[in-house]
Image 1: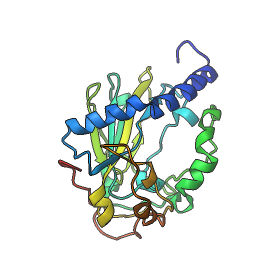
Image 2: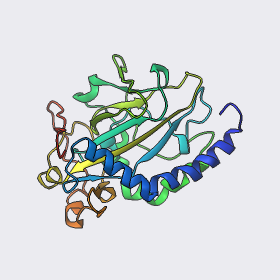
Image 3: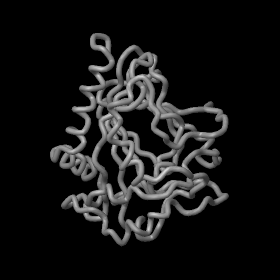
Length: 254
């Protein structure tokens, strides 16, 4: 970002990121990571890994390098049993890390998820990411009320280290004022037993429709989750429950 025009960097990322995401070697390596953590490859399904970039000083924060506001993945049609895996490629610091907001793990936030459908997003918006350079006009679920982001938690794993958390936990992209671009990889998993039993975190404020369930691939042979299970999630997360937010258990096979 110190040497190239922002339009050129956006073009490079628009070419690089899909190639990385869909490369067969990426899937093989994610499967190896899950095996190292003791996950059962027959019962664990994962989605393709995303390559993320967070530039410094507001150089590029939209489209292909979108800087995420406070959100839960469950606002974006993710199931309540989803586990997120996030790792930095280079060393990170508090000024270019990711922030977690524990206050809102059990406290609901009024948000725009009621207008979000994952299938519609894929049909109309995802492929246009590389076109949004100065600003991002694509409609995404965002908080619709003021939030108190302190206290917040910023974890700093070493390059190749891993943050593992629930897709229902509130988190955000830290405004990057470190002077250097942050590069990271993230992917998501579900355990098929949780999918079948509808286990997972308690839904406190997600109202989206559609489902990301068709994105997940079985660890053994990269087959998709059976369609009959996906259809059970088309209506979105369970209706909002006024209770303490729980987190899916992460252990061997989770």
